Length: 446
View 1 (cartoon, helix red, strand yellow):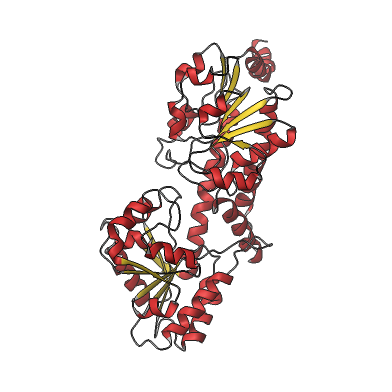
View 2 (cartoon, rainbow, N blue to C red; view 1 turned 60 degrees about the vertical axis):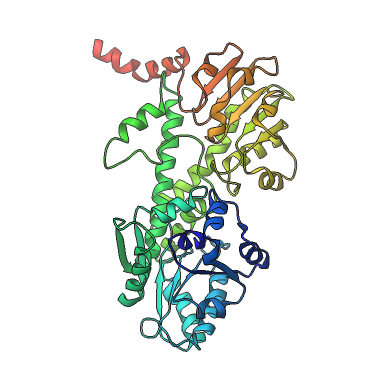
């Protein structure tokens, strides 16, 4: 975010309590892995600097974005411990600053957290009042790891929760110098914006889960094809095609916990939130069902190759990764697991405790595999050829959870190709449908 704002011509001062991150940015190195970040820093380094001193950053700027972790607690709510520390430090810095300053929280929080959990600390330590002496906004970003820079600079819309109109106007004016002019803005109360962030993520996961249900259903229908179904219903403007690709469930640092948090706040306020809680439960039930199917194709003491370990392509993050969950389940079953991911090697190895052998390339995995699972739709896997799957010299079962492999692989006689979400032309599947309607046909004929 700092590099993106600097790319639009603004001077940006980054603050972090981690001295390594500060030292890295000041040395011109990206402190985190993200697509295109190092190149952006290289180009706009002159407008970027970092410090561990909150007061320095606040005194040399007019607007502060607070982007800190809000980890889930044992209730499923979001903890404000890191945000409170930031707001206290900002407040202390603002106590001796006379100019108007706007503080913007972007971290995901529950409704009421900004106004009733954070603003009192800001006012106490600054000696000023929000809306009168300083500005406060809540403005979360709708970004995805792997495409953060593009998503931030080219958002579908800007969401601004404002403590007062001056605060919201200040933030909107800043955003207008960063994003294209045609990007729509929605300004509202702090609480409405906090709920809107949670609601959007929850809706997307509901859509993903619906697509995954369609994939499982299509796999049980002769000639069923989840992509054909999704392409059709996605043409309806009320539905849309995005997030409607059936495959493995959602993971990562946001989606799973957001559903739980929405359920928590609904219960705390005496409302029902069955949908997000059901979505969460269904998402967690998907891996055991898929692993049960995988076990049918795995010989005793067999070797499984799992291609893709991050929770999504173009990311090194394995938090709540369904691919990692599959690996863990297969290891518990007693299988030998070889795995590969373009970016998540180190994080996955740490998460798995070294129990799976993580290889240097997908082809290294395939040479010894009896069963292959394509666990993420990474573009690298689209380059695999039938020869790669024949390298071990024996028949191999390939379960393509995202239906991304080349068609010639499915036709290779040494490959038993199973596209998750597609039903084969099977007599067993057909008989289930025939039996479903047999009685109706009989009575109609009578």
